[in-house]
View 1: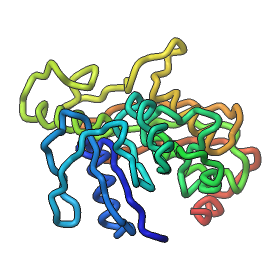
View 2: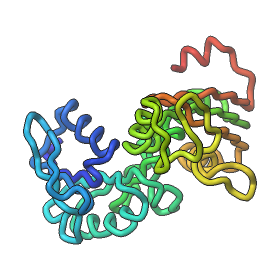
View 3: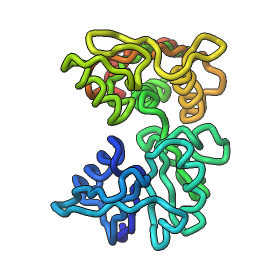
Amino acid sequence: MSSKSVAVVGVTGAVGQEMLAVLEARDFPLSGIRPLASERSAGKTVQFKGEELPVEVLGQNSFSGIDLALFSAGASISREYAPLAVDSGAVVVDNSSAFRMDPEIPLVVPEVNSGAIAGHQGIIANPNCSTIIMVVALQPIQELSPLTRVVVSTYQAASGAGAKGMDALRRELAGEQLDDSPFPHRLAGNLVPRIDVVQDDGYTKEELKMTLETRKIMGLGQVPISATCVRVPVERAHSESIQVSTESPLDISAIREAF
Protein backbone atom coordinates (compact mmCIF):
# COMPACT_ATOMS: atom_id res chain seq x y z
CA MET A 1 0.00 0.00 0.00
CA SER A 2 1.26 3.46 -0.87
CA SER A 3 1.63 5.99 1.92
CA LYS A 4 -1.50 7.96 2.78
CA SER A 5 -2.11 11.34 4.32
CA VAL A 6 -4.61 10.69 7.12
CA ALA A 7 -6.86 13.03 9.11
CA VAL A 8 -8.44 11.95 12.39
CA VAL A 9 -11.55 13.98 13.22
CA GLY A 10 -12.41 13.91 16.91
CA VAL A 11 -8.84 13.01 17.76
CA THR A 12 -9.06 14.07 21.43
CA GLY A 13 -12.02 11.77 22.16
CA ALA A 14 -11.80 8.19 23.38
CA VAL A 15 -12.27 6.67 19.91
CA GLY A 16 -10.03 9.23 18.25
CA GLN A 17 -7.26 8.27 20.65
CA GLU A 18 -7.80 4.60 19.82
CA MET A 19 -7.60 5.41 16.09
CA LEU A 20 -4.19 7.00 16.61
CA ALA A 21 -3.06 4.03 18.71
CA VAL A 22 -4.09 1.53 16.00
CA LEU A 23 -2.41 3.55 13.23
CA GLU A 24 0.77 3.52 15.28
CA ALA A 25 0.59 -0.11 16.40
CA ARG A 26 0.02 -1.35 12.85
CA ASP A 27 2.67 0.96 11.41
CA PHE A 28 0.11 2.19 8.88
CA PRO A 29 1.98 3.67 5.85
CA LEU A 30 1.62 7.41 6.45
CA SER A 31 2.84 10.36 4.47
CA GLY A 32 1.25 12.64 7.07
CA ILE A 33 -1.17 12.71 10.00
CA ARG A 34 -3.53 15.60 10.75
CA PRO A 35 -5.21 15.62 14.20
CA LEU A 36 -8.52 17.50 14.06
CA ALA A 37 -11.00 18.43 16.77
CA SER A 38 -13.42 21.17 17.82
CA GLU A 39 -12.48 24.61 19.10
CA ARG A 40 -12.67 23.21 22.64
CA SER A 41 -9.45 21.33 21.91
CA ALA A 42 -7.59 24.33 20.50
CA GLY A 43 -4.08 24.43 21.97
CA LYS A 44 -4.05 20.76 22.93
CA THR A 45 -1.58 18.20 21.63
CA VAL A 46 -1.81 14.46 21.02
CA GLN A 47 1.00 11.93 21.15
CA PHE A 48 1.83 9.88 18.07
CA LYS A 49 4.97 7.81 17.57
CA GLY A 50 6.77 9.60 20.36
CA GLU A 51 5.92 13.09 19.12
CA GLU A 52 3.53 15.71 20.45
CA LEU A 53 1.32 16.83 17.57
CA PRO A 54 -0.71 20.05 17.80
CA VAL A 55 -4.46 19.57 17.39
CA GLU A 56 -5.91 21.62 14.54
CA VAL A 57 -9.40 23.10 14.78
CA LEU A 58 -11.79 21.39 12.35
CA GLY A 59 -12.88 23.68 9.53
CA GLN A 60 -14.09 23.71 5.94
CA ASN A 61 -10.54 23.65 4.57
CA SER A 62 -9.18 20.96 6.89
CA PHE A 63 -9.02 18.22 4.25
CA SER A 64 -6.78 19.68 1.57
CA GLY A 65 -4.22 17.04 0.62
CA ILE A 66 -5.87 14.34 2.76
CA ASP A 67 -6.28 10.84 1.30
CA LEU A 68 -8.14 9.18 4.19
CA ALA A 69 -10.30 10.89 6.81
CA LEU A 70 -11.32 8.93 9.92
CA PHE A 71 -14.34 10.50 11.64
CA SER A 72 -15.40 9.95 15.24
CA ALA A 73 -16.86 13.24 16.41
CA GLY A 74 -20.61 12.57 16.37
CA ALA A 75 -23.27 12.40 13.69
CA SER A 76 -23.84 16.14 13.29
CA ILE A 77 -20.14 16.78 12.66
CA SER A 78 -20.00 13.90 10.18
CA ARG A 79 -23.01 15.17 8.26
CA GLU A 80 -21.47 18.63 7.97
CA TYR A 81 -17.83 17.80 7.28
CA ALA A 82 -17.69 14.34 5.66
CA PRO A 83 -19.05 15.62 2.32
CA LEU A 84 -16.45 18.42 2.42
CA ALA A 85 -13.71 15.85 2.93
CA VAL A 86 -14.97 13.81 -0.03
CA ASP A 87 -15.13 16.94 -2.19
CA SER A 88 -11.48 17.56 -1.27
CA GLY A 89 -10.53 14.11 -2.57
CA ALA A 90 -10.49 12.08 0.64
CA VAL A 91 -12.12 8.75 1.38
CA VAL A 92 -14.09 9.01 4.62
CA VAL A 93 -14.50 6.20 7.14
CA ASP A 94 -17.20 7.39 9.52
CA ASN A 95 -17.69 5.97 13.01
CA SER A 96 -20.94 7.84 13.77
CA SER A 97 -24.54 6.88 13.03
CA ALA A 98 -24.88 9.60 10.37
CA PHE A 99 -24.68 7.43 7.25
CA ARG A 100 -25.18 3.87 8.47
CA MET A 101 -28.66 3.34 7.07
CA ASP A 102 -28.19 5.37 3.88
CA PRO A 103 -28.80 2.81 1.10
CA GLU A 104 -26.16 4.48 -1.07
CA ILE A 105 -23.40 4.18 1.56
CA PRO A 106 -21.80 0.83 2.43
CA LEU A 107 -21.93 -0.23 6.09
CA VAL A 108 -18.87 -2.39 6.54
CA VAL A 109 -17.35 -4.84 8.98
CA PRO A 110 -14.29 -6.12 7.06
CA GLU A 111 -14.48 -9.65 8.51
CA VAL A 112 -18.06 -9.95 7.24
CA ASN A 113 -18.71 -7.85 4.12
CA SER A 114 -15.47 -6.28 2.94
CA GLY A 115 -16.68 -6.61 -0.65
CA ALA A 116 -19.17 -3.81 0.00
CA ILE A 117 -16.29 -1.33 0.17
CA ALA A 118 -15.92 -1.52 -3.62
CA GLY A 119 -19.24 0.26 -4.04
CA HIS A 120 -18.36 3.32 -1.98
CA GLN A 121 -18.71 6.81 -3.41
CA GLY A 122 -16.41 8.50 -0.96
CA ILE A 123 -17.94 7.52 2.40
CA ILE A 124 -17.75 4.17 4.18
CA ALA A 125 -19.86 3.81 7.32
CA ASN A 126 -18.80 1.93 10.43
CA PRO A 127 -21.55 0.20 12.46
CA ASN A 128 -22.42 0.45 16.13
CA CYS A 129 -19.94 -1.25 18.46
CA SER A 130 -22.43 -3.91 19.58
CA THR A 131 -23.40 -4.68 16.01
CA ILE A 132 -19.76 -5.32 15.07
CA ILE A 133 -19.34 -7.87 17.85
CA MET A 134 -22.52 -9.68 16.86
CA VAL A 135 -22.08 -9.90 13.08
CA VAL A 136 -18.55 -11.28 13.41
CA ALA A 137 -20.05 -14.11 15.48
CA LEU A 138 -23.10 -14.60 13.26
CA GLN A 139 -21.45 -14.69 9.84
CA PRO A 140 -19.81 -18.14 10.14
CA ILE A 141 -23.15 -19.60 11.25
CA GLN A 142 -25.00 -17.84 8.41
CA GLU A 143 -22.59 -19.46 5.95
CA LEU A 144 -23.48 -22.92 7.30
CA SER A 145 -27.25 -22.36 7.29
CA PRO A 146 -29.29 -19.16 6.84
CA LEU A 147 -30.35 -17.48 10.07
CA THR A 148 -34.08 -17.33 10.79
CA ARG A 149 -34.07 -15.62 14.20
CA VAL A 150 -31.60 -13.79 16.45
CA VAL A 151 -32.01 -12.83 20.12
CA VAL A 152 -29.14 -10.91 21.75
CA SER A 153 -28.44 -9.43 25.16
CA THR A 154 -25.51 -7.03 25.46
CA TYR A 155 -23.46 -5.97 28.45
CA GLN A 156 -21.87 -2.69 27.43
CA ALA A 157 -19.08 -0.88 29.25
CA ALA A 158 -18.92 2.81 30.12
CA SER A 159 -16.55 3.30 27.19
CA GLY A 160 -19.57 3.03 24.89
CA ALA A 161 -20.45 6.54 26.04
CA GLY A 162 -16.96 7.77 25.20
CA ALA A 163 -14.43 9.52 27.40
CA LYS A 164 -17.25 11.21 29.32
CA GLY A 165 -18.73 7.82 30.18
CA MET A 166 -15.48 6.42 31.52
CA ASP A 167 -14.79 9.59 33.48
CA ALA A 168 -18.30 9.51 34.99
CA LEU A 169 -17.85 5.92 36.15
CA ARG A 170 -14.46 6.70 37.71
CA ARG A 171 -15.92 9.67 39.58
CA GLU A 172 -18.91 7.67 40.80
CA LEU A 173 -16.62 4.89 42.04
CA ALA A 174 -14.67 7.57 43.91
CA GLY A 175 -17.87 8.55 45.72
CA GLU A 176 -19.02 11.58 43.73
CA GLN A 177 -22.69 12.32 43.13
CA LEU A 178 -22.89 13.55 39.56
CA ASP A 179 -25.30 15.96 37.92
CA ASP A 180 -23.51 15.82 34.56
CA SER A 181 -23.45 12.06 33.92
CA PRO A 182 -24.08 10.79 30.36
CA PHE A 183 -26.03 7.90 31.90
CA PRO A 184 -29.74 8.07 32.83
CA HIS A 185 -29.01 6.57 36.27
CA ARG A 186 -25.97 6.07 38.49
CA LEU A 187 -23.79 3.39 36.88
CA ALA A 188 -21.38 2.49 39.70
CA GLY A 189 -22.71 -0.58 41.51
CA ASN A 190 -25.62 -0.71 39.10
CA LEU A 191 -26.91 -2.11 35.81
CA VAL A 192 -28.75 0.27 33.48
CA PRO A 193 -30.98 -1.53 30.93
CA ARG A 194 -31.45 1.60 28.83
CA ILE A 195 -28.89 2.82 26.32
CA ASP A 196 -30.05 5.83 24.31
CA VAL A 197 -33.70 6.88 24.08
CA VAL A 198 -36.71 4.54 24.21
CA GLN A 199 -38.65 4.29 20.95
CA ASP A 200 -42.41 3.95 20.50
CA ASP A 201 -42.17 0.16 20.23
CA GLY A 202 -40.42 -0.10 23.62
CA TYR A 203 -36.97 -0.83 22.24
CA THR A 204 -34.18 1.68 22.76
CA LYS A 205 -32.42 3.39 19.89
CA GLU A 206 -29.31 1.28 20.64
CA GLU A 207 -31.36 -1.90 20.33
CA LEU A 208 -32.92 -0.71 17.07
CA LYS A 209 -29.46 0.03 15.66
CA MET A 210 -28.44 -3.57 16.27
CA THR A 211 -31.47 -4.86 14.40
CA LEU A 212 -31.31 -2.59 11.37
CA GLU A 213 -27.54 -2.51 10.99
CA THR A 214 -27.19 -6.29 11.25
CA ARG A 215 -29.82 -6.80 8.57
CA LYS A 216 -28.05 -4.37 6.24
CA ILE A 217 -24.52 -5.73 6.77
CA MET A 218 -25.49 -9.39 6.44
CA GLY A 219 -28.31 -9.00 3.91
CA LEU A 220 -30.81 -10.64 6.26
CA GLY A 221 -33.94 -8.94 4.94
CA GLN A 222 -36.63 -9.05 7.61
CA VAL A 223 -35.16 -11.85 9.73
CA PRO A 224 -36.48 -11.22 13.30
CA ILE A 225 -33.79 -9.75 15.56
CA SER A 226 -34.49 -8.79 19.17
CA ALA A 227 -31.88 -6.96 21.25
CA THR A 228 -31.70 -6.01 24.92
CA CYS A 229 -28.84 -3.60 25.65
CA VAL A 230 -27.58 -3.10 29.20
CA ARG A 231 -24.91 -0.70 30.46
CA VAL A 232 -22.58 -2.35 33.00
CA PRO A 233 -20.21 -0.69 35.50
CA VAL A 234 -16.84 -1.48 33.92
CA GLU A 235 -14.68 0.99 32.00
CA ARG A 236 -14.02 -1.05 28.85
CA ALA A 237 -14.99 -4.29 27.07
CA HIS A 238 -18.48 -5.13 25.85
CA SER A 239 -19.85 -8.68 25.86
CA GLU A 240 -22.90 -10.35 24.36
CA SER A 241 -25.06 -13.43 24.72
CA ILE A 242 -26.59 -14.47 21.39
CA GLN A 243 -29.23 -17.10 20.62
CA VAL A 244 -29.93 -18.01 16.99
CA SER A 245 -32.22 -20.22 14.96
CA THR A 246 -31.24 -21.52 11.51
CA GLU A 247 -33.08 -22.99 8.53
CA SER A 248 -31.38 -26.35 8.93
CA PRO A 249 -30.24 -28.11 12.10
CA LEU A 250 -26.52 -27.66 12.77
CA ASP A 251 -24.15 -29.86 14.72
CA ILE A 252 -22.32 -27.92 17.43
CA SER A 253 -19.00 -29.36 16.25
CA ALA A 254 -19.57 -27.88 12.78
CA ILE A 255 -20.29 -24.48 14.31
CA ARG A 256 -17.13 -24.64 16.41
CA GLU A 257 -15.08 -25.64 13.39
CA ALA A 258 -16.48 -22.68 11.42
CA PHE A 259 -14.81 -20.32 13.90
